[in-house]
Image 1 (cartoon, rainbow, N blue to C red):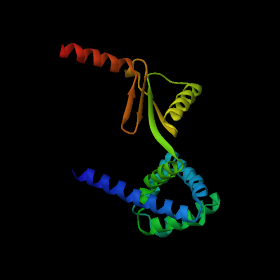
Image 2 (cartoon, one colour):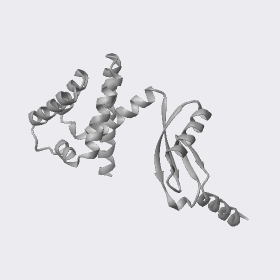
Image 3 (tube, helix red, strand yellow):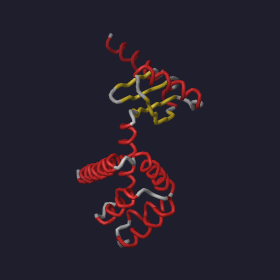
Image 4 (cartoon, rainbow, N blue to C red):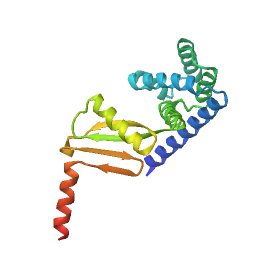
Length: 187
């Protein structure tokens, strides 16, 4: 029970900070620049466990963390809004949530552009051409740009599953077998 409370706090906190940064970016007409910087910073977080440990280690003083982010900001030519935001997050001791804040900002920015996130699960690895064709067809059908998170699940046997919000399209053989089994049980 305690863990779920912490998780909720972390999600709510990171969501509020991401929204604040997004609104500041919109006001300053800097969404594109800040998004580019954030995508870079998010990649750094994903690829460097040492950097994440630095962020999440409460023994580091805020002035040390500020110095590191000041240097990163100079090297990467970060926008003034983002520099100030990072400084504020460090000051408030919320840098611990940086990876989640960045992720939520990216989702807000994507939504702002009219992109919709969806999950595409296939039974085998699909070529980029196959992924693009599926993306194009579904984007045309719902008249919106879709960004797929792609996964492979061999237990599907054959076919695809597409999760788009609450809509699930399941053309997998394993789903067809489940339905046949269910109809046999019911009859």
